[in-house]
Image (cartoon, rainbow, N blue to C red; front, side, top):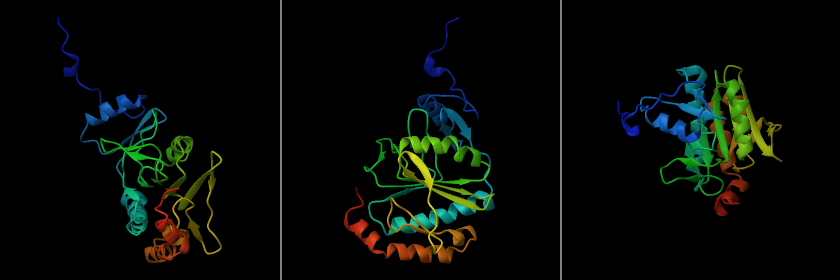
Length: 225
């Protein structure tokens, strides 16, 4: 019997726990257009379960509202929602949000995927907390993601990590309860207000950051180095 041409052979489906190269991961992912989210983290495939509104959808929307407001008033920045990131040969995550300046660390490739490490990555972690705080965190650190936010919704906690000397350290709120980005001047977060759903306060504090001298200088300097 003559074997069918290789191009006619069916592509194996992605399965949780598969250990694949990034090339093979993309090949299988592209053959499953119905699949909404799959990630390659440290060479292992992770496929998302159904997402609930209070533990994921609503917090995700609140973070996008906060980041989207900042992006709207900060020319040169790009905000992505659930975009695939080609981080390295063993990692192709799909973060809940990224904020980046194309060409500074990461680029947008010819096929419209992010290549490299965005400056800021955000994950909403309910059932995925173990992955987000371990394997994924290690991959982001190794590849130079400068700031990494994990909102552990089931715990009612948000971790904001800043990369310093190749290690992530926790960025803590100041005496007013505000966490300030070191990479994106003016990106201020009223932490307690976010955790309690007080978005009016979150956006009011962000507006203070947008009005700050450091944000104005950031815009004036062209958001580069």
